[in-house]
Image 1 (cartoon, one colour):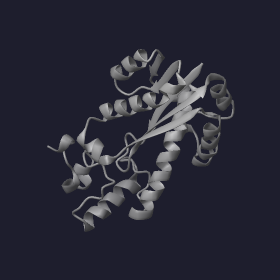
Image 2 (cartoon, rainbow, N blue to C red):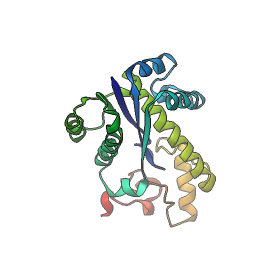
Image 3 (cartoon, rainbow, N blue to C red):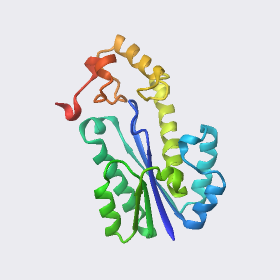
Image 4 (tube, helix red, strand yellow):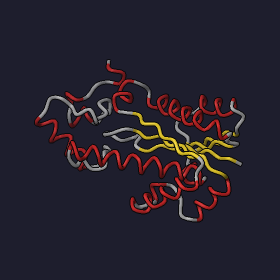
Amino acid sequence: MILLGVDEAGRGSLIGPMIVAGVVIEEDKAELLAKLGVKDSKKLKREKREELFKLILYYSLSVTIVKVFPEDIDAKNLNELTYDSVIKIIQSALPFKPGRVTVDKVGKEERVIRFIKEIGAEPNVIHNADVLYPECSAASIVAKVIRDKYVDILKQKYGDFGSGYPGDDKTVDWIKQVYSVSSTPPPIIRRSWKILQEIAPNYYISKYGY
């Protein structure tokens, strides 16, 4: 059977894009990747993720990513943006005729499940899919590696802001420092995240801009 796994990285980040990745792979190759160490990206160190990333590219039939930038996240519902991205990835995989589509579940995912059924595939949309299914683990690694590399590029321009997540003191301190010297928020910040009300109130905008 041909499998498609879909997962994201950076959904909860305060800085930078969300990356949604899809991996199309034959079932036996997915099992092989699991034996080679592919698992949920959060359980792997960066060096290991990058090593496995190369193996995923080698064994997969197709790898697709969709980038969702802060300005889009500030303007639209995050779940709907996620579903849009997942559907784009499924559409890109149609030539391979996946028999099962595994998605790490966010929200109700009704639109995604309906679309998977419409293309004649088995919907496997569940929580912790990135832990339980190697095709989804592979997608989580691809998404994380791509986001990490994108974040590296942002740091070259904007300085070291840490992980970019609101729970990271380094990220919070970086925003406070930028806020102290500039009234214009860097475009890499998600301005609708409520933590800004506390640490950089003039940068904050309510969701959808009103």
